[in-house]
Image 1 (spheres, rainbow, N blue to C red):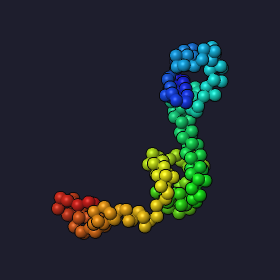
Image 2: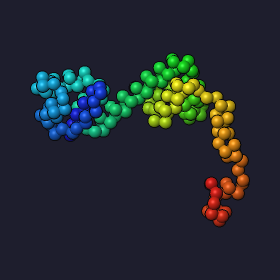
Image 3: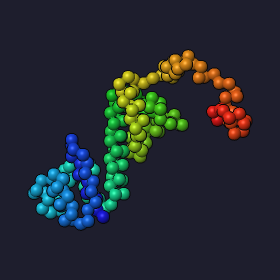
Image 4: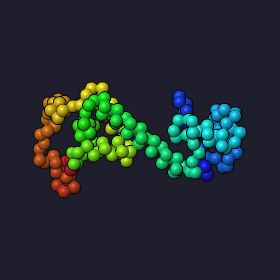
Length: 175
């Protein structure tokens, strides 16, 4: 079944399954599309093309979800480009500041987002907003802040605390 998606600024995204073209026109009309647009599918499609992405008629929900994912990837890439330009940081430095896994230490985690291969998760977006507002933390700053928790006692562990309770039979432990 086709899926009608209408996205307009300041209004909730409407996503409704349609049985046929007539159904899509009726739903568009009741969703606030202009009357002139609701006369034919061709005019509806032209109007949807002028609306915010992901507006359109999709073959099914999976196609609409793929379109949404692609839009999110493109928006994330644009967001990171602006962040790199604003902060003057390198891709490697930004990946480190956001806490992204970058095993090769070459900025590939950021590059994948910039190329539209990956989207950012919510925690990465929050970290980016923090970096833009407060600047990146150095490893020494991070260590200083973490050492304030319990006066740094969290770093000292008794070997018995680390033992697996299933193996040691003690009934307590972290591993």
